[in-house]
Length: 151
Image (cartoon, rainbow, N blue to C red):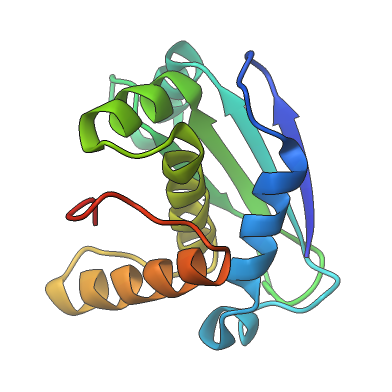
């Protein structure tokens, strides 16, 4: 999976490291079944103001959020999967709140967004359980440890 990453704000992480996390997530069998090796994902790490603007424009919610996922239209196999927007200030706040590294929080939000792009959701309890299981599997493949109780 190709990951096109833009850091629109100053954020102390290496883009290659986040690409590694997302590629590890793409290797989880259930995730891999929904994409192929030629697929691409765009990720934009930005600020709260942009997340608030996007949230208002696309979801009619007037507040910033931590991650937004925009699935591409049509077949998810091959081509462009979709876009993620992640708030770096939210990453910093949530990492401090939960007691793990900023990169661990960034990885969590990126994997969460990828799963949304690929059609998973957490609106019901069974969906939430499955999405949590897949998130944990993806983060474990990437060697990312979250603080206990984060998800």
